[in-house]
Length: 157
Image (cartoon, rainbow, N blue to C red; front, side, top):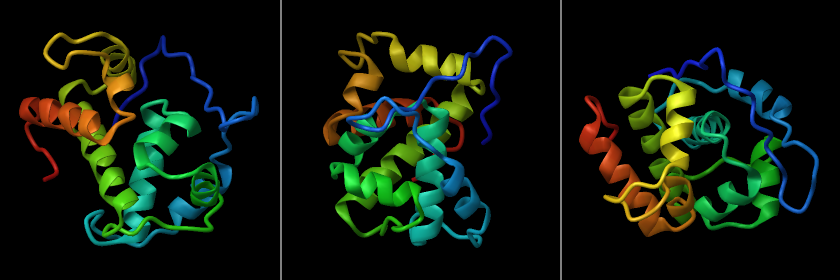
């Protein structure tokens, strides 16, 4: 499911942890265009592509992506610079798959980035918090994914 940017959406900056410079997706984009077809559940290249796409579309900065994947800043930098791919069997890969599933479910339910960002930033009593805040822990991310996939017509499970 593709997410479409609404006309009123202002681009959110992606900030590298410990830096004020925007996160550079240029090299990652070049790499992503060369990824062969693959299933995110078994292909490191496809999982990396979809993880970076989800991070970009959901306006997840490097610090939050680092928390979501439970890894360090060097791994995030390496992902963006094509130096590393996420193994689906690794702990970080399993967390990345949750992020990809969330991205797809949000696209299915809301369809526009404006609506997705509004939902991520709003407090939801049924989740006991803001989804963007909950995503920084594995349990919180799993709760958010479960909630959205229950609303989705075509979840990736």
